Length: 293
Ligand code: PAF
Image 1 (cartoon, helix red, strand yellow):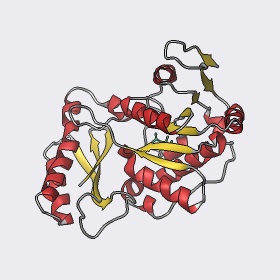
Image 2 (cartoon, protein in one colour; image 1 turned 60 degrees about the vertical axis):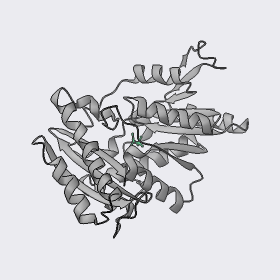
Image 3 (tube, protein in one colour; image 1 turned 180 degrees about the vertical axis):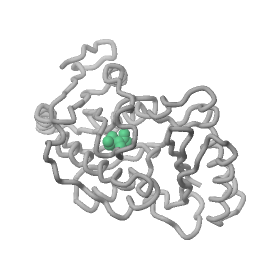
Image 4 (cartoon, helix red, strand yellow; image 1 turned 90 degrees about the vertical axis):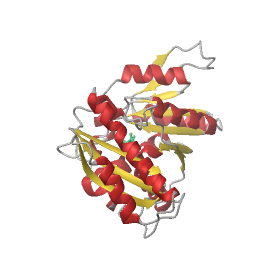
């Protein structure tokens, strides 16, 4: 499928590719022509955070592929797979506007055979943080990212630090499996209110949006403590929990302080090298956020 695009000075129209075969063939052709390909893996419901990933991909490659695939294997049985926002038409329009070359939007049945029985499991980084409260989540992420890498064959892939643990898992996977894809980290993007951009923010309304600001505010309080010289993990963590707990809408899932790059636990806070990461329930919505301290 081709989308016409003349007004943004694109040389060729943006393609929407829906089958792995067509995607691989396109990538092979581009590689054959010596073009560098960057992949931005997404689950759609694109927002400005994704657009910033696309901008970084464009700076690092000749061809930018955005995959839009709500990956069933990274959702738990009681999670929001069915409710997850899906808006392929709007996503494709936003990609076209931003100068993306290909939107790869495969069906679930083209990615996973009915009897698929092979997974990619990273066992150390995934054991922490979201991995504890979402069993098998990172197995699903590592598996689908490997599949996407095998189909799209990118030279580079861009992941946002909104999901900092996810980037650490992917970096470890790529290192351990000798996968020849450069992983590019992109900074987390926030609304003016401080709320980290996320597709799941679409679940929030009215007073919930007000409350959601507390996540970044709590992290900022932690950051200020470190700037003021408090390097005690327990005290900084406790204060972040305390800040979050001031709202009865919020239930803390975890607050942890980890290495900013590897997302592994640390024994002491080293300013600039540690990250406070948190997950909460805000009413029925699970939100995550993080900040380098
Ligand atoms: O970050 C996401 O949107 C997803 O976890 C990813 C990387 C696209 C894999 O499904």
